[in-house]
Length: 629
Image 1 (cartoon, rainbow, N blue to C red):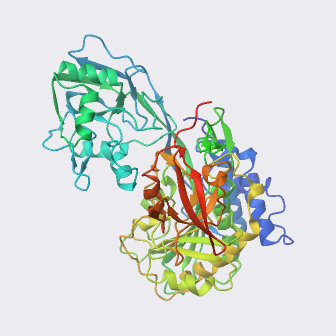
Image 2 (cartoon, rainbow, N blue to C red; image 1 turned 30 degrees about the horizontal axis):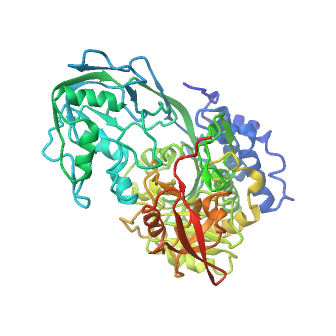
């Protein structure tokens, strides 16, 4: 395995003792009675987000050290090991990255010369490595949408065929959530898979302004696999196939599609044989699980409340998040840098550790309280989903035992409480009782609590909600250090985090003690795309938006990017955007819809409220691709 770490000598009690011994070397004074809750919280973050742990990337010694540290804290608090009663570690494997191999090839009849890998085609990182062989069918943009009157798959037989299609969506479509949903590679590959296709070959369309073109480089950092061989071919190679089939060339086909014509059809006498040439690499990883057992006399002693947070982060990687200079995106650094992830999510992990300490110091609970530090969240919620699919708690593997998961509390990014004290709580409508419990405890908390009905769909609470468990996600908001090397421990607001934990302790305490488990509410709308996909627009403003539903008009700005278009125009954190151009803005969806209508370099009027006053700012929108140096 790639950069694998050393296994424990034993998964049993001896192994746990070894964990405690190792982790205690880094404990400092975290167990000292003289420390305040704020100091303890900060000390956990200081260690977990230290350079020594190198960003807690999957398959690295640093994330193993983090797991050891958390297990030691659970043992120290008096929690029972949550895996068979003997180990704190639930071990499994996850995909971490892919490598391009020399197996990759294409042979296209009747073309006289073989395509060259890297020049004529490249494997997509989400490709499977199955061999494929079949006729070619041109599928336009690979989109069937009644709303947009796009029927690229109409009357096509793709069974055993190779689907050839443009990336993205027609240029005339606005950059909105509906366009993004249809243009995702994931959506298109799954659609072809459902229709029995053998493989997918993508082509770059003539691009919109600010969009990349040409063959991409193979990106081995994307571990996902969508279930079909998937490649991108050059426009020149695609044109040669179309000419061989006596069809129009790409420019003409794209023009006809953009005018509303359906031009899909088989490429007569063109056959493709090949293999993507990708190798999946995996790493052994661990969820860390500790249990505070219920009073055995309690009638609720077979029920569990989960308090969780993910402890993995990005590792030592090339930065990919946006950086602005003078209102324009700039190219990122090309050298790997440690991403310490202090807020995301050493803060939530520290919260789990501290809540374990608080609950364990009290009386025996009515329900079992389970504390879990999940791994591999950043790669796609793998840790929480693995636990849901392979529960380690007594009775959960037996549908007749009476055991059940009553609720889940997730803490993901609780370390940067802003001066306005806003704490967002996702999933507030996932149980009928949740809002009343939150309302009961928010008064006097010193927090400005904002509830969001739906789940975020992008953190570990989503794995539980999808399987019928009501779940809350506590979150102090994103910021300009999100997923950057600058998310460091010295920027953590530990005092604010402890305020959040005080509230979370009371809310979860009610759930642990309630005579009746919270009633699950199904089919909530998600607030964001599923993990693994984020919309990309032609323009960016450089703000971090709030998802909370509020009675005040407008969308609250949680943070502004340094030297981004919004900051250059004078926007500040805490402003509420109420209008962009002629479009009113009340939610993040209004905000995204308004931006989707603009082009890079355009100056738009953005009306905001600040301290009860209305201000009109002139914002020069930046392109979504970095300016070349």
